[in-house]
Image (cartoon, rainbow, N blue to C red; front, side, top):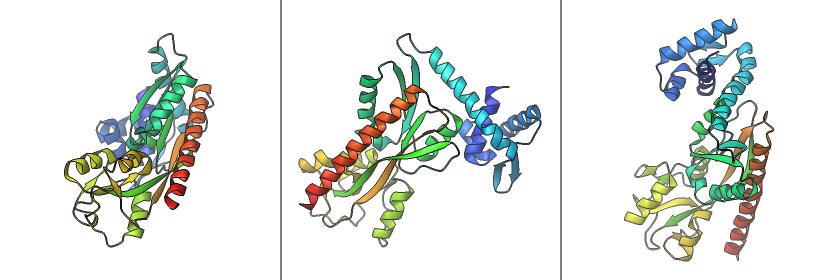
Length: 293
């Protein structure tokens, strides 16, 4: 069986339709349809129910899902392992939100280098949808994000609470004006922000990455919500200022990983994320106590 057939099957499963799978794989929709048709002919059974709502797995498709993941994962692992030098025993791919690569995930990389120096790491940036698709398709081993989606055989485990604080470049400027930058921290942030500030117009400036908002504020001034752990030093040096009486918004940070894999290097990586997440939770709790006093 062509590995691309299994990869295409997983892409359709993740996207829920053939159009989304084609965009993900950078091929035409007719190519996706042809691959799935050939795969169904090889297996002798329909794998999807097509309809206006998209493509839904049949009972046979749900049974094949586990095998397709194993096939793609085995292929990717083999390709990775073949390329490893003799100094490494295994390879691991982690994909995470860009904000979590600022401070938190680099600590995990350092922890891995000290704890498991024989593990080769492939490190990537991604958003929630792409991370979950990568997990379903077997392209990555662990994902770290704010708002995971439920997927069969994939665990979503809390690792720490990300406290976001409203910051401004000037104490004298009212933050509810056109200088406010609305950062897309995910649907959970949007829900909490809308509940706390139902009348605030966020349409003037919208960005999808916190790093970009920070560059804009450094250049032109303004205000935005940022994770506390990213602005501790900026507060101390009075480069940015917390907006008085503004509420904290807390987002849970999750790691996602496959439930059907028990390899030692993945278990080690998960252990490190748990330990560092507990440390970050404690650090943020101490910040809250310090602010309260």
